[in-house]
Image 1 (cartoon, rainbow, N blue to C red):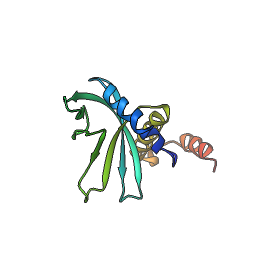
Image 2: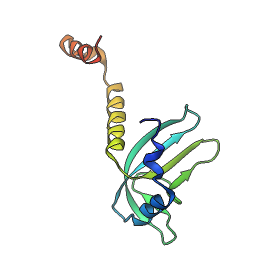
Image 3: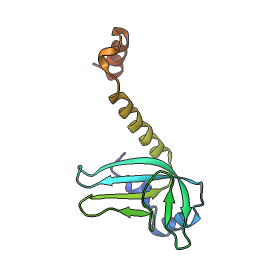
Image 4: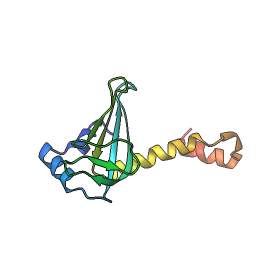
Length: 126
């Protein structure tokens, strides 16, 4: 994601708060996960709103914590924040890229044919 990805999260406070209040059970959202220890590593996941309490706490299907004002801040030792954000094409692209990188990590490159290895070489430009 680009260095200006904070724009994807906060819009402006009023716009972000209005968006949070407009959410309904079943709406798709993205979660921005930021780890401040791992060189400010940021990644995104896609989720759905599971429940919203009368006081605005939001629970998603796959994430174990409730979001208060759109954010979950873990204990200091964890050094992570998780923020609900709108799904955009940039976010979807980031999620797909992370998925593909993780998928490629599972491949034993020794099992690829010479032709497949040549195709990869052509793609990476070596």
